[in-house]
Every structure is written in C-alpha cells, then in structure tokens.
Image (tube, rainbow, N blue to C red; front, side):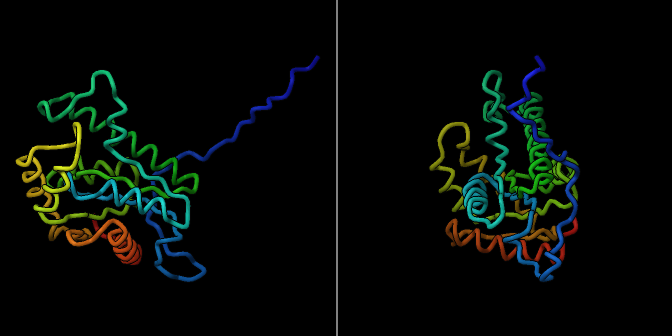
Length: 219
C-alpha cells in the first residue's frame, strides 16, 4: 500500500530578513501607524513602564502585533540564570547579548510573516555598539526606537512595586535613570509619561510613531 498522506500538513514560512524602513500605505499616503506593519524598540529605565505600555499597545492595534520582552526572553534561562543584581559579570553580559539576539531573530520572523512587533529594553546612550547598534544588527534599519523617560521620582515609585529579580535598589534605579538622560539631544523621540497612564502613553506613542515614519530618526 502507498504511504498515507501527511495529514499534519506543513506550511513554509518566509524567513526573516533585516527589516527595512517602513513607508506609509500607498493608497492614502498617510503616516498613520495604526494599520502599518512596524518594528518598534521602546527604550527606558527600569520603572518607566516599558513592558506595560508595550503590551497594551500591541494588544490594541488594528494589525497583528507581538510584544517581545527582553526580560521575559532572558528569564527563559532557568538553571544557570545569571542575575546581574548578584554582580554584573561575563555570564550576565553574555546572557543579555544572547537574549537580545534571540529577540532580534523573533522580531524579523514575525515581520516577515506580516506581524508587527514591539520590543522593550533599557538601552544606554553611552553604549552605542551594544545598544542601538546591536538592535540594528539584530532587527534591521527599519526598527523605530522610541525613548520612554518619566521623572526619577516616578520610576522609583514604580520600581518599589516590583517583585523578584526585576526590582532594583533605589541607588541602581537612580544610576540607570541618570544615564538615560543622555538620550536628550540624541535626535530620538522621547516621551515623558510622568503624568500619563498606560492608555494615554500608548496614544502618544502612536503620534510619535506617525512622525517617525514620516521622518525616520537618524541613529
């Protein structure tokens, strides 16, 4: 008897190439980002609300959108997890680099298959090779970086509500927030969400993305 047909099926998915700079839909010429396939990198210090805003924004878009959280991917490592709170070392550095590369692969594959994505990471302006340079290598030049930077008192309050290894000391939060101030004058769009809730921040994010699509930031 001939072998039975493969009833499970097999769908060949497009491979993820580097992401090109997005353009407005040709039918309207509009830079409205809500219906465009995008790759967004949401940058900010611990306690800025990156993960909450990214998840909310992704859930409510008109087109399929994924939220890729660097911290979630990093915590896939269960045995041998290198927690930088116990001391920054080569292992923790390597695991962060591996997580960023994994997130980049995932983002390119989502985008190649018509699914937008938003990534979040605490990228420092004084480490361009590892930070923005790394994300450009992993995802492509079409990645749109946006900085979420509320005031120090706000990030301290939000960090205090965290649990587990994602909660940092006040001193570390203040140090990270101070380094993030270097984004001012960088040319990247910055959202101060000190007085905004998650929904309001997501609406501002759409406005900022519309401007970024019309005139992509140089980075």
